[in-house]
Length: 64
Image 1 (tube, rainbow, N blue to C red):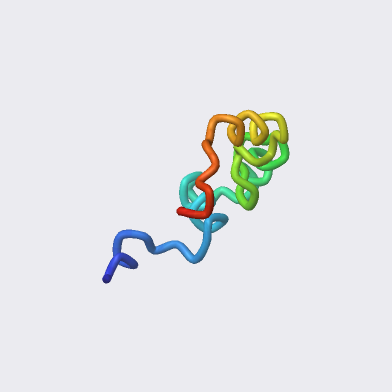
Image 2 (cartoon, rainbow, N blue to C red):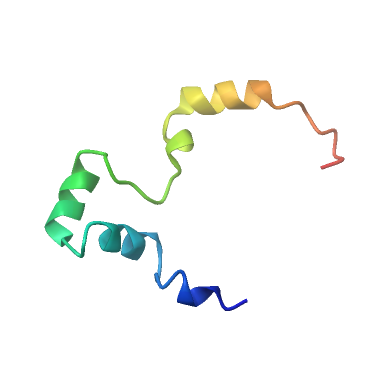
């Protein structure tokens, strides 16, 4: 599709590093205090939010 010209990142960590101007110390600080995260989506980090989300989604009955 040729999208690599618009998204020149190897992975989400590389993307976050570029967001902070390649300041690895700042990224480490943001990761340490929870301001920047990657891996597990924010919604999934809080088990209560997952349970609340699942309650709102109707069962698809195998049709999805």
